[in-house]
Image (cartoon, rainbow, N blue to C red):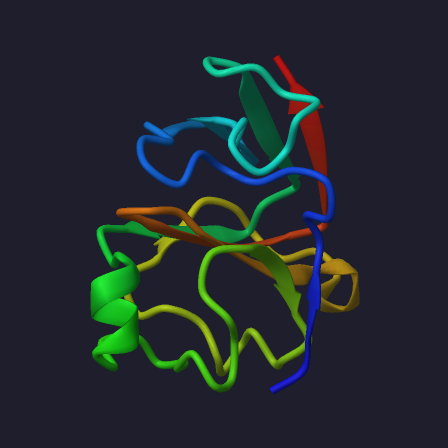
Length: 136
């Protein structure tokens, strides 16, 4: 499996990220608490928001790290390490979560990217044109 890690100086809180998902049209926002334990430039209680622009579909499920290591996901830890934010360099039209919500049409398949973010008790996955990280 080919992938690219996208979060190099930040990550979600490993204990209680408390993710909150908001969908407005084809814009999907995922808010969460940041990891102040690993990254000293954050304070406990700092939040961030990932925004996905022109999102075609997404999945937000309750798969946690225990389920991932027990093989309850279509990937395994040897293919894709748990706990980070990635762009998956796969064919998302074939390789996407079955538990997905389609929220908009595809205008240009070549412009869409496949993202996955593993949080403590959830897995977020989407297909969108682009993304943005913002500290709140």
